[in-house]
Image 1 (cartoon, one colour):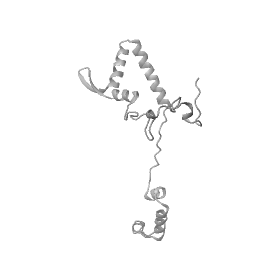
Image 2 (image 1 turned 180 degrees about the vertical axis):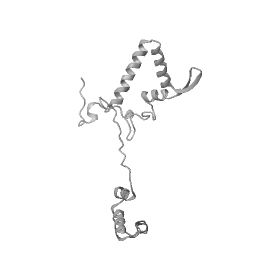
Image 3 (image 1 turned 90 degrees about the vertical axis):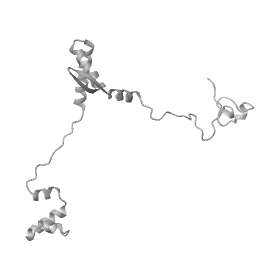
Image 4 (image 1 turned 60 degrees about the horizontal axis):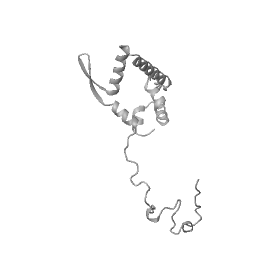
Length: 159
């Protein structure tokens, strides 16, 4: 294995022109601010999974009975595989069974979203108690106790 020249030594110490291991000739060295990869990685380069998904999402026309349907290529592939499985192709049967098992496992592991709806409101007072700010509720109660119209008192902006 070659040993590297420590940084503490001058380049001029190893050879007369300063060229050696780790010290290329001056005319081939990168200039300050110059990149070692000037073109860099191409922008907007798609990886293989993106390309596959785009191809499978493309629409094609298939004939089903007497009708012509427009479906994605992915759907057409699934339909074709299922039809081959129904005709007795063992590889297609295995593919469909494996696909179904995989889908069932994903559905079991996926979190379920539950939305709880509040109980129905029976009166305006109940609605105000549940959802209105405290100031408005208190103003309505004071207005009710004094016998004035709570709607006209709160609409004027004065509690």
